[in-house]
Image 1 (cartoon, one colour):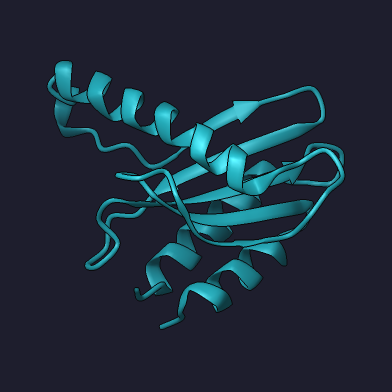
Image 2: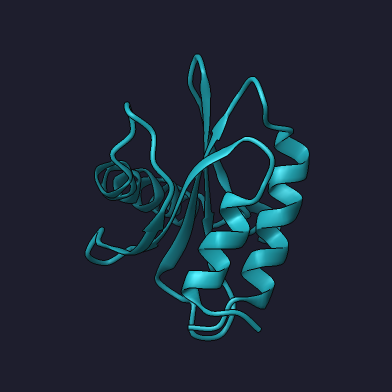
Length: 125
């Protein structure tokens, strides 16, 4: 089991990762951030992603989450980056999400999703 700081360090160790945050869905506030890039304000990006997560969850609710499907993650693809959002589902993680920014030129999206799933399963708040 890992805490927030260790989870963020593990997320940043993912090939191509340039930033990671753990975010409270209710307030949009980052509980922790790690990483830096000249053109990336993690706190601002994490807060902005809160609206995306809320809208996606609301849409799934309205659709009755067809077939019992649950949201695993949300991907935003930019010209040079991937922004991966993973809502936490484990005990103590409700209302939080992991936010990961990847450099498209260096990242393997499938492996990043695999690693972030593992990080979520080991995270304790």
